[in-house]
Length: 207
Ligand code: DX5
Ligand code: ZN
Image (tube, rainbow, N blue to C red; front, top):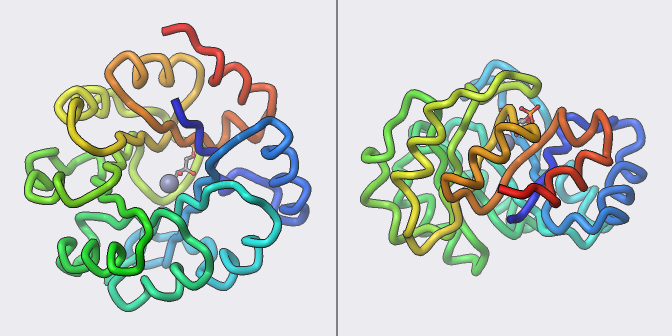
């Protein structure tokens, strides 16, 4: 299992220290939630911030774009140091075109679906992506409760040639359910940043 802490729940006034602590816990991936105030009501950060924190850690940069019309933004995130860019199926631009563009830069690409979007809507994209991101909360903010419907989606997606990542409401209990169902990557914000020992709890889960 790959754990991808979401820095949305980190203390941004000491982001260097926060990233260092993740490194000390041997975390391999860090999840970066980009929100534009249009696709979701909140705004977080953009490619400038990604570029600024890039030199602070060697962790794999897992960029989750919760933005409308991502096509014109992709190159900025590639230049900023993203190693995987995940876009939303619901984000207006033709997903296939955006995915092809991301791949043309030689980095990994993912497709994400919101809780009310069914797996069969992205069937045509599954053989083109490195990762499928299942939202287990409505995108837009941290600290929400896990929506159980995500478990069925993991089961439906299991067995393909891509990683299955789950995002939202992950804690010890919901992580277990996801892993039992076949998830490969778990995003956790609130649970990890309220107590970094929870990184160990998630990494040591017996499921
Ligand atoms: C929600 C974000 C998530 C969020 C997860 O829109 O995509 O990555 O930060 O946070 P928790 O773990 O608090 O649900
Ligand atoms: Zn996310």
